[in-house]
Length: 95
Length: 483
Image (cartoon, rainbow over all chains, first blue to last red):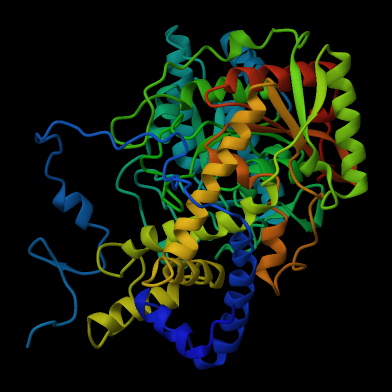
């Protein structure tokens, strides 16, 4: 399995990463090598096997729908790169 | 004082042979001298440590000591520590001061442990050599040309070099056991769900598990007892009583059956490593255990399955790093997409980007069945093979790695070469099992680790078997020469 440069950029966009043109070849090569390794799985017959998401097949525990957390907005926003009046600032999205 | 076990330290403190402040100062001093050669610590919290030690001494004087009161430890820099930088070995979090303590950190703090600081790791725990850290590689204390292993390489090197008597680690695919093996210490990866993941920065959530790293199984037992337990805040934490691990260390191995998976002793294993492991197995037989060959036929398949599932989960977990709420933010973003892309591209290292890309690819439309679903199916088959094995054996005995520590820089060209070295540790994580690595000797001054694998929640049995072995041998007492 070879991941070409076009596919590389498509996946990078999905992951919100950008790949510098000078790194295209090395990423494409490394990812292709990983995909080759991963393709070894296709040699195993897994027909009818239920995929295992949790190693003990435990299901998600649910808690009562009640307020358990206190408001820590100020405390948690202290580490944000940019905030104003309790809101996170990002570049303008709507003109 | 630096060579005492945790139990001996607690005893020394109780008998006022030394104070926690003296003990803490001794280790801090050792860090100051030795750490520049090893790069095992990212952050040393001297002030906080001395204050905590003073408080511990007051507690001891008041007769209110708990099991770890006044004992120095360190945390892998993947655990959130309130008010202290929590970098995850990444430029992304170089400026991140955690606003709260991880459950493990809080539990050990409550038990009285004194944290000396945060240890180095592969970036976001992705790596087997500690070379992907933004803060540089950790050097192996036995041979500074060699890697310390990863991802908990800083914790392993720090414990081996007597910079701290014990440390926390995390293990998603071998990240406690492999560096423990490479640095000649003891490291336990508990059952998935045994120790809370809350406040431990996520890599692959269905496999991440925290555990103790120390110089002996006895010390690991003492630590695990304080780390383990149900936590409401971790949705996959399992509600299962925590035994008194320390009191269960006296059981004879007489009548115990150990399984040797033939696939773990095949071509991948270097002959010299095999020799050390075989010799250790002979010791276990002398202690009364019987050994039989078993088969885990899909051993090799753990590598591709793991390197689909873990990057897939990582790509999802690491989407939270967006330059908006915390962490690195690029300069002058022109729009939101530019903010996301440049913040992430400028702050993540290469291995992290590779895994995010592979994970995104594996989860993308049209590929999900062929990769992620297939890997999760193979995961079930691997887990079932282990269950079959545990019908006829109590524990599995195997090498931790095919070879001792490799040279720094030797695996940097092709990541796949490094992934192949994880062959003996990955299956355990896929199946959620506990496993321990114990030192069994050296090859050219580089330590070799033996792995014992147990069924779910068999930590007490694993710790006891490792302890019995360490009572009869002295490999775990060997230490690197550093000045």
